[in-house]
Image 1 (spheres, one colour):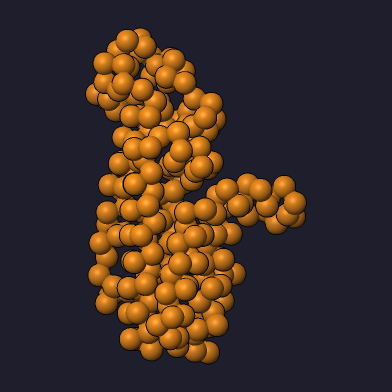
Image 2 (spheres, one colour):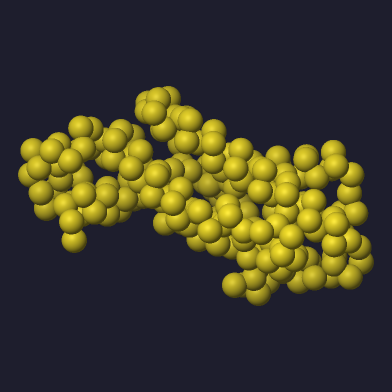
Length: 209
């Protein structure tokens, strides 16, 4: 494995386990079994490492953000979210304590903003396609609002889940609960047959995969 990849893999492990605020470059060097000098040869600081990981995450999302909306049926849309949260699970530190990440690393802030707009626009396009296929009964304003709501869940659900799980008796992963929330947002805009399909997916998110 190349040294850069070793550093990024070691960083990802530590950042997911401890959070960005607590991880130091010394700890990353130890995890990667490198000298600190060798680490600094490849990355000037922790911010550069985090930015490199964000770019990797973005690259992993390219197939999702490039799907053809016209081919997207309801189950495909649910699968889109399953794959989204699978990717988020591998880079979960990016979705914890985002205030710290965005304000401590000014270079990463535009990437968050761009990602949020990409997800929102992709969801709006998918909803418009579902409406065209008569799977959704909604106005354009409805579709815009739902796209914003599901984007909020996509980006901020992990922080909400961590706060909420301490007072909740439900034993669900953050990704299962997020998927159920997202699916539930579409129920009021479905015809009866589609509502049954969505309710089945809400009860058994594993059916999506």
